[in-house]
Length: 324
Picture (cartoon, rainbow, N blue to C red):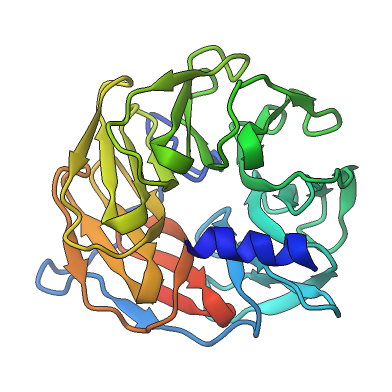
């Protein structure tokens, strides 16, 4: 599986509070003619290294981060809606997730459980949690400027209530790798992971209980809207939909490719991306999906939607795709 390969390599050497946990207000819908639907186009390669995460705090400002070489890896930023990207910071750690709650304040999490915070838009970073042997953090979710969560390998879940100054471990009693954590509200959230594992909380992440997923396929990506609709994606084109907070239903994705990530712009529009440039789209809240022609053969590892018709996906060897 693509994500496991990435990490094993490094061990060896609002009502619409949407998905990305950024507290972003939904952007106005572009005034597009229905005869000209949005499509993915290939963008410039941003880096020779894999990009594992992308995040936009508004329509213009976004960041991307991921893999490294022995010389370090880039943190990239755009301030013009993705038309151009600049390296603003060099990191010597692998970061799998990044999130900003404002144009200046954000966090990164990744290899060895490291967590860093910036208060100047990514130009400088302060380590809030140092490396710990055997740990990996794969996902990050701040529901506001103070309350945030991180999830990772072997059932690891962390929680902060003071902007990351202190992080406490939350017991999950799980040994599976956890891949994505998302919240519908400050109280209600989900985590997806290996072997079809789904965990849920209704008490602001203080405790987590397992939900029935009816699959043993690895679940890698998760999108949750503010009204509680959740979509999980994973191995072999697996897609699960939860409309009531409890029951997960398998739906046909139209593909057998590995799906690494999913995002929503509103309660109807979802995009998922994965291996060999796969992109699948739902306009009915995840009930049905359409496979779109790939624009590249590179694996796509992360996705961010700005609105229903604008978004970005990143992946292997600095791959960038733009939805427009």
